[in-house]
Image (cartoon, rainbow, N blue to C red; front, side, top):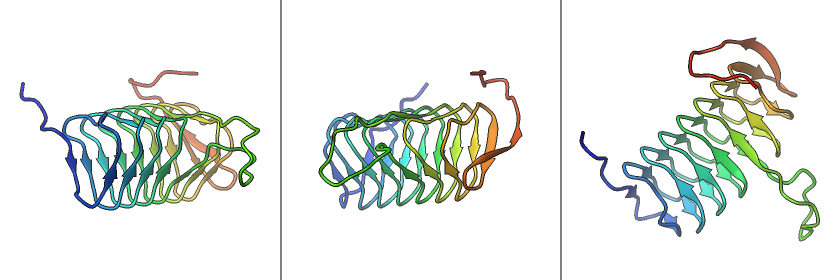
Length: 165
């Protein structure tokens, strides 16, 4: 078995963490803050922001224009489409941090479509599919496909590698 090469980091990115797995590619104009963890074999496309406290598994694709805030966990094999929006504060106010931030988890093999909005404190189940532009206001079961605003389940399938909640 051959090992993956070390990570590729485009020279026009600002990378403040050393916890980046082998074979991961980070493209131009990305900012990754200290405390972020990124697994092996990932592709972080241009114009992404990843805060400290974010955990990204192996073989994850994060397309351009995505911001991942502290408290977000992305498990192995997840796809995040361009300009998908994640939030971690249910009631944001400028300079008011009286409400704790909520954690969000995207389970293994799930996909989040372009321009989807994921509200805080949500779990997207293993193998789930969030359609482009969906506004996800509650957790998505494993294998479910959700679309619309608010996102509703339009289909569900069970793959061998999925578990049930």
